[in-house]
Amino acid sequence: MPSPDRRGLLIILSSPSGAGKSTLARRLRAWDSRIGFSVSATTRAPRPGEVDGTDYHFRTRDDFLRMVDAGEMLEHAEVFGNLYGSPAAPVFAAMNEGRDVLFDIDWQGGQQVRNSARAEDVVSIFVLPPSIAELHRRLESRAQDSAETIAKRMARSRDEISHWAEYDYVLINNDIDRAEAELRAIVTAERLRRSRQPDLINRVRALNDEFEAGQ
Image (cartoon, rainbow, N blue to C red; front, side):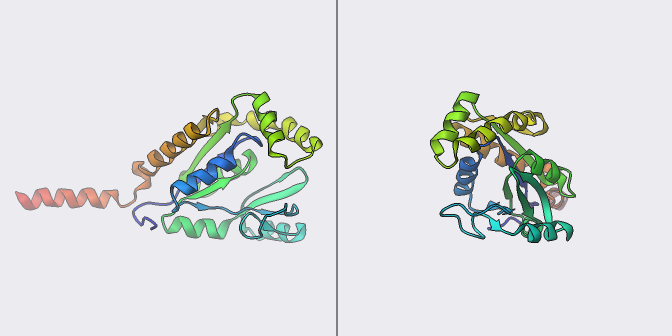
């Protein structure tokens, strides 16, 4: 159940393609079903098996730009000629219920969320591969993209990795189980920050009242 005793977190998970952020995102939500997921809107065509509203909100370019102009996107960016963005309304609704929301987005989107009005609720995590050779191997083993697309993703990865220092935490995904455990630890610690427990002062006052009543 949502916790009314604290504000929800905006958990940003970013990495170059193939470093493992999508797998870690799935595992984190399996660990705690209370964590919501920000389903991105995109102008790219659905891949086989993808479901509108579950994997992405598939939109025409005109519809997407209308949402941007109306202020309905928390963040947006263009990647490989396609637009991607996070609809704001469901994110804010979840946060106001005390639920955490997970974002699987790139550094451009992460930057925009960190600069938004909800910046104080952001926890940003960047996932690094153990090596560039391993990153390339993972992209090839997915068998989802052409050789040309893989080459483009590898070329882009250098720029993406250069933004690692903008994040609160950095995980090296050499072992997915260990990376998952580290991710869980980050989320647990961030939930317990004093600043994220707005009802804490009332709890402490109640304890002091008990001291006074006992004297």
